Length: 235
Image (cartoon, rainbow, N blue to C red):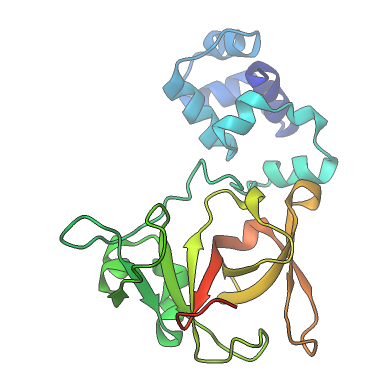
């Protein structure tokens, strides 16, 4: 475990003294010093420290951050570590029917502008239209997105792609199709190539050769959904 080593590393890289960090966390300097010397803090204090540095608790405890490249460490220090495994903040909002079974929410082209801001808002999700596809396995969460543009034939503009929620982005399989909900580019449907373990990015490729591939850093990604069907048929 690397908790003591990591908090000292992040503190010193940020230019904070022990007293600075202790004051920010509401701790005594001696208590923080003991944590940096190997004493394990209570779980709630571990969470507070992880939140302060904007890292996952898993990353703070189980990974030697001193082994990261300069670029990756600088991203953490800037507060832009992406929660690739979905363990920190990425909680999915869903709706259920009278039998407590999850619905499949429908995100039309018109609704997509609001989705990037309301995807985690229970009221927004509750107001989306809903339907069922009984043939889909029940151990997953699904959402249906209307497709814009002509970049992914044979799926044409206006078609509906139903996809299953991907919690751990490390599970992206090269060459498979996904819905990607992004911070700046809205909702896109692309073929993905996984470079998360390399440079924390994904490559997005269209099946229409008129559209060039491009790279997206994972800190620009809000949600990823794995393609299941379109208009009720597999491709």
